[in-house]
Each structure stands twice: as structure tokens, then as C-alpha cells.
Amino acid sequence: MKPPSRVREMPILRVIARALVPVILLFGLYVQFHGDFGPGGGFQAGVIFAAGLIIFALTFGVEALRQVVPVVLTERLMAAGVLLYGAVGVVAMFLGGEFLDYSALDPLTTGHYGQHLGIIVIELGVGIAVAATIMRVYYAFVGRRPGEDETGAEQALDAGAGREVS
Amino acid sequence: MPPVELLLMLLLLATVIVVARLKDLFAAAMLTGIASLLAAGLFVLMDAVDVAFTEAAVGAGVSTVLFLGALSLTSRREKQQERTRILPILIVVATGAALIYGTWDMPAYGDPDAVIHHHLAPELIAETEEKIHIPNIVTAILASFRGYDTFGEVVVIFTAGVGVALLLGGLGLRRRDERGEEES
Image (cartoon, rainbow over all chains, first blue to last red):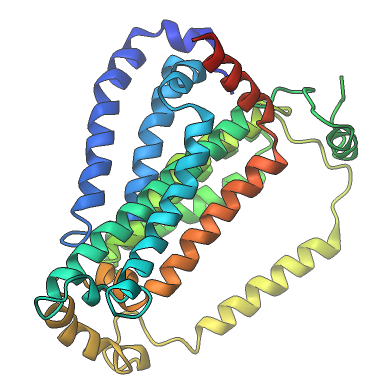
């Protein structure tokens, strides 16, 4: 969805978005790294972070956002988040524990520090994966134009949905 | 029911009824966002702050944007339905009645004698702080005790993202991206 040119000409929206986006991104990071003390965690943080970037795209255009976060980057980060989570589990196994047993991450103490470390890292993995997935889904939605189709199968689907195929 | 909760419930009910009756899809999409925000307010009042967080960010924020994105590809108004169909209405009413009937067996909200407050919750509340050493019990349970589940959920989210990317294309986006990288 390309914002109509009118949105870009509205000074109030532009100024407010410019002021709000950094705050939203910062709040996302706060929810991410404060999730073990206050409400929130990786999932919420990822969504808030992505929402901040989407507000940026709504006000300044998708192309402006694509210069900051290319589509390929979102795809790679989606996988990187899942791998980061899984890697914590594997590292715990190498250190003598079971898969995702964070206590093993810190063999020197009784495991409290390991629990803390493990939770922070896996929440970071969750946050990265969620934020990247939402960005990717957003790109998939706005990347389509009415009537623009890549394969005949999609045209058939559109025709089946009663939509005009140009 | 306390007045604030009652007010939010009534507003939620009114919003949902209006959404179902509206033919203007743009207004309907915005009102679904408002419904999510009201639900998030209710969750906060029920002390489910983590859930409220998610509902506000996903329901009121991102999904509204995605609705609008989908709307920009189709028409803004719902097609006029020529005749009222009886069967769908019957199914909806029957399902709703069954769900409401099901709530009669649920313990009252906040009932300290409810089974769920006696099974695992007391142990978790008593021991989490000492075992995991972080104050937020919800995070401790989700990230540590149920680490496998959460890992599975992240994989589900990843799979959903891959599915959307494959189904809705965006291949053009990718190609344009790569071309952009070559140019720069």
C-alpha cells in the first residue's frame, strides 16, 4: 500500500512520525531487554519494533524503509532469530547440559547466571525472528499491486476470487 | 462487574456489532483495531499485562495495517448480499450459544478455589524466583520452563513468514532489491 501523496504533504503527520518513530523503536528495545523484569519479552518487543518501522513506511513511503531494511535482510534475520534460539540449546548441550538447559551455560555457579543469560539470548532470538517476520509479511502485502501477477496460477486464483484481472 | 470493565465490555460489544454490519471495509478495518485496543484494556484490568501488550501491538497495530494493505488491492466496499442466508446465521447462533453454555462451567473470574490456581501455579509462584532468579514469572515460565514450546512457537512464526513470502510473492521485491544492490 503506497501512501497517497497527500499523507506525505501533511506536515503534522510527518513531524509527529519523525518524533515518534525513534521513541517507539527505543521502547521496543526496552521491552526486549527488560522483559525478564517487567511485562513484555521478545515477541512483544519484535512486534513493537516492526510497528515503529511500519509507521515510518506509512509516512515516508515503503521505498524509504526498503533503503533501511531491504527485503533480503528481513528474510535473513527471520532465519537468524530461529537459529540464535536453537544455538543456545546446542551450546548448552556442548557444555554438558540438555537441549535448552540454560543452567549449563554457566557451570561455575549454581546456574542462576546461566538462566539469566540463556533467557536474554533466546528472547533476543525471538525478538529478531518476530520483527523480521512481520516486516517480511508487511512487504509481501504492500509489494503487490492490483492486477500485478507473477504466475498464471495467481491470475486464476484472482479470477476465482471475482477480482478483475487486468 | 466494576464500572470500568463494564464500560469497556459494552464498547467492545458495540464495536463488534458495528464491524459486522458495516459495508465500508475501510471503516470496518479501523474499528477492528479499536476492538483490539478495547480488548487490550480489558486484559490490563485483568492483570494480564503481557497478553495486553501483545493484543495492542498485534491486534490494534500491525494487523490493522495489514488489513489496509489488503484493502488497497481490492474494493473499499463490501459487495451487496442479495438475499439473507438462513443456514450461516443458524450455525453462527448455535456456535455462539454452545460457547456461552460452555462458560457456565467455568469458575468465576478470580475465584481462589478454581482448579487452575491449585495445580501448578502455587509451586511456580513460590519457586520461580529462587530457581531462575528473574522477577517476571511469565517470562521465566515461557523462556525457561517451557523453552521447547517457545522454540516451537518461534519456528511456527518463521514458517508463517516463509509461507506468506512464498504465497504472496514479493519475488518482484527481491529482484528489485538485488538490482538495487548492483546499482549501488
